[in-house]
Image (cartoon, rainbow, N blue to C red; front, side, top):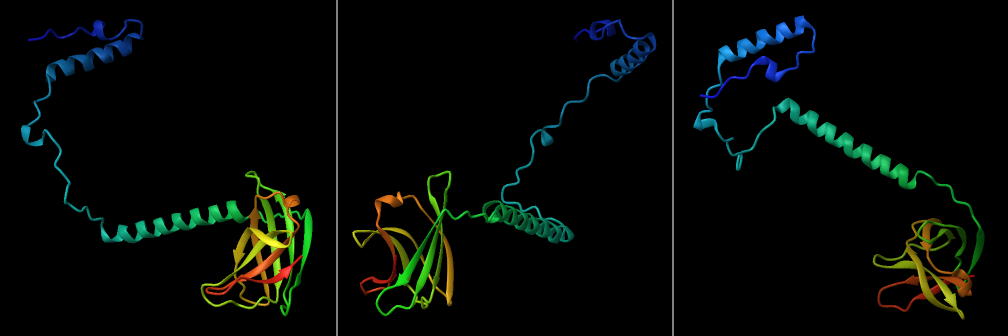
Length: 195
């Protein structure tokens, strides 16, 4: 049998006398109650929940689904606002595009600031490009000696005016112009606009 500790061994004597008396009564009650009984072996370990499905009450399922949908909507709205909500675009330079051959298309390329990654922000507005067949697209290229050499991006047209945002990492001074081509499966690319 182990020795039971005295109250003075457990607490300091420097408290108010009424507090020490209250602690002495509690100490005496705990000693009189004795130690708790041993834990029965049947409940010594938690039951396994493997293979068991814990079902929520029906009224909670709808509330949980609504809360999850609201959280997803809020996250999507916040990310959309953060990533695309600031539509400030300061045009530093504007390049006009004119049609080539029988094309009637024209366009403008607005060059903005460089972003943190070193990419130039571009706003491209084109007019008069027809809708291409499925699996086809338009490509904006930079040219060197009149030949398309590096792509700045691809896009499709769905109406009389098409507006797209792109970015390009290139040093534009190394190139002599821009072209827009139509890329159609099984055919060579056709230049429709140039600077």
